[in-house]
Image 1 (tube, each protein chain N blue to C red):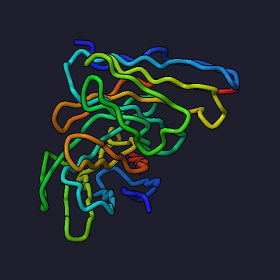
Image 2: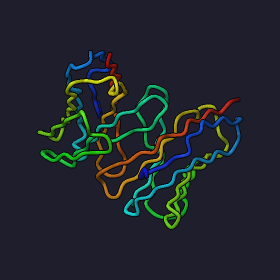
Image 3: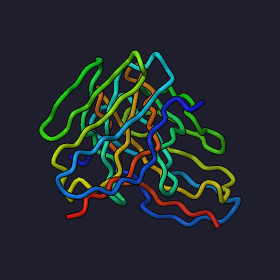
Length: 110
Length: 110
């Protein structure tokens, strides 16, 4: 059982470039989340989804977009990358109370 | 005002000490309260959850919720070096948006 899988694990982007962070879960969970975690800080919610076709903004959505065409996949799109988006990004899925996290994507924007 | 505030730490305690970790919240709609543990360079993992005021015990860990004061705590008894990690409180109004605190880094030294 793979759980929540994120790709890539590491990425360096140049300012102004775009990229998509991939997230896939195989637990048939309805709820999925994207968080960013800056050094020494907690998790800030970027976007979340309560089911296929439904997404909503979290605490820090600016500069990001998401889509949820299937239950399994919840990609996060960065348009026009900025140094402020340097962070570790975590995807999570949830059915009841417990959220399961991926291993994270370390993104550096230079 | 942030929805969830967490004592920032860091905390450094000797092995065997009792540790108290605390969060406050402002959103009266929060019904579910969770504590996650995060080891360095890993995703968070659920430690405990509760959805009512009072105490819940699980081994050396006790989660306490006071809804009237909007205050939650996690107590660790007989702390061990293996407890060294970052502890994050998390809250949810229902099973949708999941908001985290900023995390408290704990170090337990032998």
